[in-house]
Image (tube, rainbow, N blue to C red; front, side):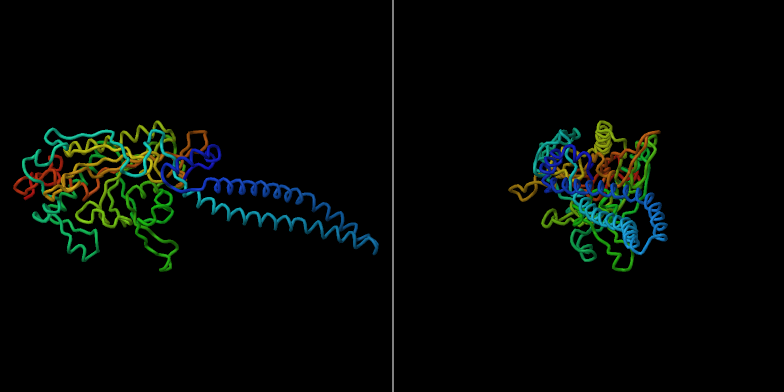
Length: 465
């Protein structure tokens, strides 16, 4: 959620930011509602002040008039009684006016909050303008000496590449047909060494973040209340991507939702808290199962392990002080952790600065890391793909957007609470990461060499098949 005070001070920043992100919002309506609500609050304060003053003065005056009434003649009595009625009615009328203002104000607050939830965080100044991922800008790349993505797989390795689907079927690494019978499209079952490799790469990423980098290991819920999805910025815009568990239909007090990333639980863990500034930064990592409906992805990557409904992910989250330079530095560090992992796996990758139209509502900046996958890309005359990069990681800097929604703040000793900044980044998501591992480490005889970094997690095995 954006800062309403900053919106008042510089509405054009938010107008332009929303336009650049391709998100339709009406800033003028928000400002009008805000002004109306503030005017109503001012009126309500004045009425309450008058109510307080009357409370002090009326008792004395009523006592005086009651005394007069006892001694009054029949001619004077009606006038005194009228004054008494007026005095007694004024507090009642004030109370009714205050209640009406309060009711109207609450209705405006609900409408205003719903509109504020729709306003995206403006992108950082250095984010390139663009409409979609097609306009993202490459800012770096890396590949091991033994493989150059500028050349074909066959030129690099001396034989024609098989896809992970072909290799998986031949080696019994995963299965799709039975899985579709179990759960429908975009479902899979990892089997044998496929499951072992999946667990190995997750443990490899998790151990690196905990043992080498020093992040705190966490296990958080993956089925959460709506407030957590809204607080982390996945609702209202991404509601169609989440699996909904309608618990209220069964008599519960709230519905639940399956999370698409461990980030939701990690961020919501401290919702509503005021942290001691000395505790910052908080650095958390988790391994969790993630669920995404992939709404709007009909026809995209329907085969294989690239775009699926359920997967496992090691996620990293940082909650830090409200300083753009500090959070920008954390953004670079978190990307650096992932680069280290990919280099240890010796997987070619490139770094993409996401353009404004690809940021989504909650990100000030987002960097994607994409691994080279021989089975992706345009199909050549021989009917086989030429190879292409595919997203495997996404690193987001959210400034105070999430923390403001979550009411997550910190306090420097003697100071007022300040809204924290937050960041997140994929450490490793599997089975998608298995695509480049399997395809890049395949051998001409159909076997797969296990990356050196994963062998300790595979009982020392060097090869599959």
